Length: 470
Image (cartoon, rainbow, N blue to C red; front, side, top):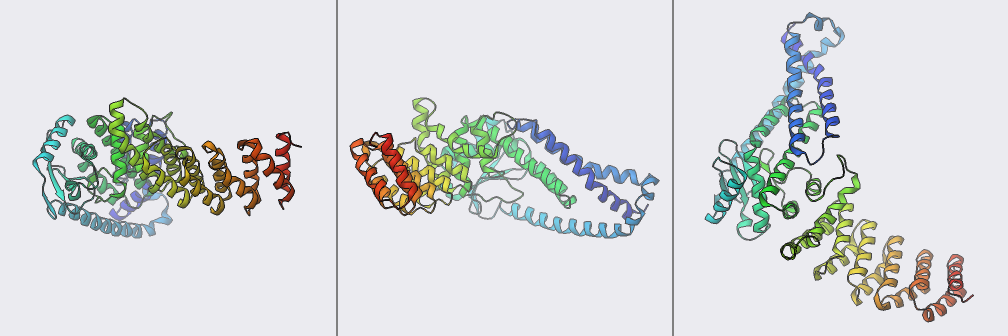
């Protein structure tokens, strides 16, 4: 068999072989717990190596077995084209990978300068704590926005110049992220990443290879997250550091940085204790609740130290996350805090968030956490103008339940004048349930006589019956 035919059949057989390998990994990952990052990483790396070994083994066997030459004769005419396309793809992918590698190496020298001695001492202490024996250089870089490690034999950790001037990350957050980069050095992840990139180049045509490779990168970050948490001793602090990086993310493909993987997934994994090996999609939103616990759980000393960071993180989640579930639960957690900045955040979310469920939660949280004149004014506007009637009704209910009847005058006015009968019915129910009887009875009688919607005046009449007036 010619070399072209051997290579062509090898590529064809790799389609089903590597698909089966990826399916086997997917099955294994469903039973290995999410917190067992080292086991999941080992399985993913082993599968990626198997996906390279299977085609190589097939090619070697085909060179000595005649049976392959008698199968699928009709497809043999296409094999030269298959090989040509594969070679072309390998050349293109190799060029892209080489360009990326050169750009990454350029980060070592361009726009970098030494860091102060205090930072080097911090890195040395973290390296000792993590058991990293190789020398690691620490440089400030004007070209990166988050910490990143480059190189395997002589590793270099780059930190943004802005960090040295007090921007972006707090010192404690930076310590946690430096621990993450040192974890990559300890685990030789840069070298593994290079091998992984070679496999991606050779098997670029197979979607299953890219899926497995993504799993490798994800579990690699989880492994380093675990080591970083062990070094800094506080999963919640490390989680807030990852959240701060959300707006700073920039890492070259062949650099290994703490910004890799799914941010929400990584923080959720750190701050929550999973009930099983798999998680409902909605559970992503509980990240906000987990972070809220930084201000509600622990001793008085840790509460004083971590509460401001937790509030910052919750505000960032409530206003900046792309996941409505995360924003919803962050807003809910904010209602339990007393930070004066939270009121402005809740008002902004209640007015402008694109998801009506998030606005609904912000309306309720605003009334519960910050009752007062400003809240009444904002909720009154939302009750009349929000594009979603459910949010309008929630605003009415929240106004009615505010302390000392602060929102009742607005609710009564809405019951009389709001253009949407559904909202007027909600206002009628709120007056029945929350207004003093002496106030509720005359208002309900007026609505029962005058409201143009039959459902509304029936609702008012039933309310009067319940109050014993009819």
